[in-house]
Image (spheres, each protein chain N blue to C red):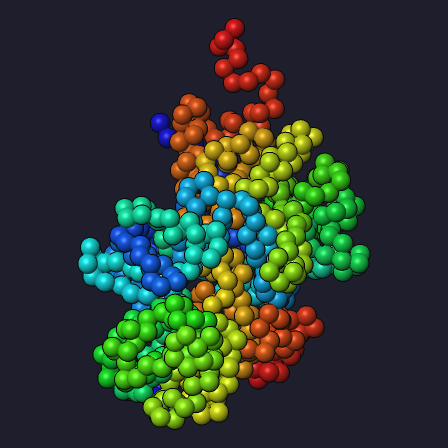
Length: 317
Length: 303
């Protein structure tokens, strides 16, 4: 019997729980050449800003062992072009779209959320909190529970009531549970864990930083253990809050690991750069993994690793 | 100046495919390697100037970036084969050099915008540096079909790094070579010979595939003779499909607005005069969406 892979975000039912992570599926068109976007659980857009943004100079990416370090710097067309061009195209292809938003001030976030609320077809809003706060000397919103919470409060207040708001958190903070708690208290309907970790590489041949932006965000399988830890901790603290788990998912087994840690959905990110068809492959592999474990519904394994006894324990006694 | 037909927009028929290509042969070509894959779905869609990407390191690889290579040649045998040339200089390409016949390689292609072809028979100069010359020979075949005459100008560090000199000599109306160490042809950069060839061959259009500094100089020289340059840029890519935004460069659009465009989807072939060579590796202050840029500015410039 096929495994039930369905899940829900707010009012919207997704055919499956494998999504594309923000910034890893382009505008969707790039991916559509290799996979049917309607078969992806949902696409999380690249973070949209109020205005067009060039991003950082190149080089922007460098490969590290099992990882990718990037400082793209939020290059994007801005909300107007996104709403006119990218979103309608995705919807016409039958895709479900979670829109990631990025701002420099609390007000910018709120205005973006308001714009999205006037638009049909937004499945959810993901608030990218790993943005420099222009009102706090460029410190990331995600680094401070209070500031992260104030963004979520503002977004929740201006977003339409039936659009779920997910807060995407940075893993490299002193107390992740505190930041997660502040976002939940501020009205976040769910959390996205994890964003990239800050990293740096130096090119030995030029004796200079490998990235024009000096630091970059580390992603890929190298950070998967960090993702598992973060999801575990947040699930432990807030068992009823939905989590989109992401961070180095490469195979169905990796996806299963994040589900067991407590993620209700999975997003595939950097692996899409390595394998453009990764999303549907991971879904297929996850289905097989679950079938082997005789699981009927993917939702049944969410957070199972938190159980007291390992699977099969009862059978052996 | 010949009119160049703009590269057709990538439609469904030209869409790239992801396949598991079987290695047919891997051979040494002087300092380089040439790998031929059985890949009918790519071979039938390919147009000169396009590239493919391959995943390196096997299924459990720690190398996440795909490696991009210009297609050197496609042949109809075995249903369709694709050949690319590489320099085994990094961990990914060294792994490629260990492949054997019948090994399977995760391959995506054909990717990117091909070289636009002139509408009328023209005098074309094909300029390549190192194994950058690999995509020029398939282009030459297409140009010849259209009655164009071909002059080659090839260059490299040393004789063993000049790719395709023999083919160039056989197929071209003329073929000049320049090497930095003087071990083959003239001693010095290719640009040393460029002006002389342009004058003698009465060049109408230059197709160039070379490192960025060379392309920049070629474009500058061609501008003096008001010759269009179709430049295939070699910018490091991580995905090749347009999702990672890693391979951007500042290019002025026909509307006069500079944008940071991806060389994998909007290139790798660009009109040389539209690339802002002096601003490579930076964000030009007047680029769309640059810091300090405002929407009003765009209206002003566009209007």
